View 1: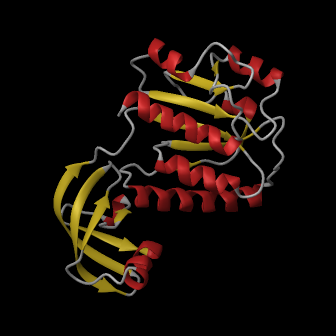
View 2: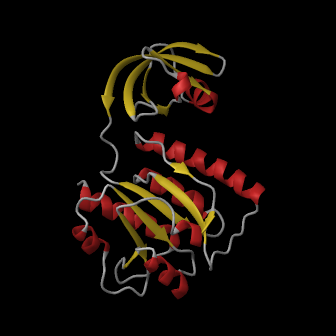
Length: 244
C-alpha cells in the first residue's frame, strides 16, 4: 500500500510537495523510504497526487508531483458527528473509527449525563491528541478529506450549531422513525448532523430541546447500542444506503 499524507497549502506548489514534522519522521525512520519511492499526497482541496520522493533531509522530505486526480473515497454526504464525551479513552476509539468510516467533523459534547468534565487546559490537550488520531486514521484509510475535531461544547450549543439538511438524534425509546425511513424522506441531503448520547443516554428534557431545533429522534433497531458503537452504526448505515 502506498502511504498517503495530507499536506498544508504552504508546503505545496504546482510541481512539488514538502513533507515535514511527524510525517517526515515516519517516512524516514519508520517506513524507511528512499529517493525514488512513491507516495500519495492530498492537498487542502482534497486533490490526490501521485508523487515521488526526490530529496530527503533531516525531518524533511521533498516530492515531485507526477499526476493529479480527484479522490472518490468520501461519503456522498458530509457527516458532522456531535459525540457526547464518554468515559476513559473511548473517545480515541470513536474518533479513529468514525474517521475511517467517513465523518467530516467530530464535535465533542458535554450533556446532562456526561461524566467527564474537562477544564480548559485538559480540553486543549485532548483536542490536539484527537486531531492527531483523526489525521492518522484518515491517512491509513485512504481518505481525501482530513476530518477536524473541535473543542467540546455544551449540548445546548450543539443543537444550535451549523446549517444542515438533516439532523438526527438516536434515542432508545423512539419506535417509529428509523434512519432508513428518514433518509427516504430526505433523498437530496448533502450534509447531516448526528447527535450521539453519553453512556447514560440523553435525558427526556434534552430530547425535547432537540425536537424544538428540528432534530429527528431515530431508532437504531431493537438493541441498545453503547455510545462508542452508535456513531459507527450510523456511518456504516449511511455508507450502505447512499454509496454501495
